[in-house]
Length: 286
Image (cartoon, rainbow, N blue to C red):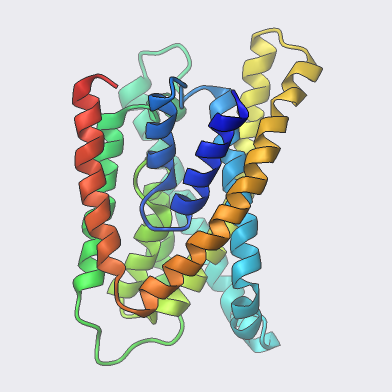
């Protein structure tokens, strides 16, 4: 994998990860167009490292807002922590059984059923993009309620966590787009929903990184690779991490402005158009 490939994928990941348009769908399409296998352990590790870069961008960008809301007082901290735990628990309760079910139904005939084997399927990516686009469009075009909840409560935390779990097994179903849209449809303030959604992302990223590192180690061990050869695979990921961090900061500034100015539905339109384009690539043989 050349520096050019890493640069292209990192910029796409950084920009698309923090916009509600599904970074994974864009990176998968870009990787296939460049002749790479998105389902390979090496590639999924790179994608996870890119996710880590955008996670750091989220922390840097939202730190001031989180400090003023989540960490403004001991009472605020005690209020938000149980909500985040509740959301994350529901994400696990929905996402993990769904992942196992998909592996059993669609990959049960294979020797080693891993949901990552489906990540390069552009037909599935197209359907997920369309589903995310419909949800974002519904939230963006909905008339704001007369009374807006200033902070997400248990209802919003529960639904956002469950919807995040639905997103996990699918490439193309934007996690940020789905969770922010869910909070908006439930009547919570847009900026607070955005802050809460990305706080959930920061919690979710480390276990995903550990899972992909373990998967890579197992694949390299089965292939008889040496420890030094395996460690060398992390170098491209570290470069991508830095690049996706910078691109992520740009994307977050863009996202916040569009949320504030009521342009959320444009992301939904984009996802629907992208879904049609990805399905066209699938029909073309990619």
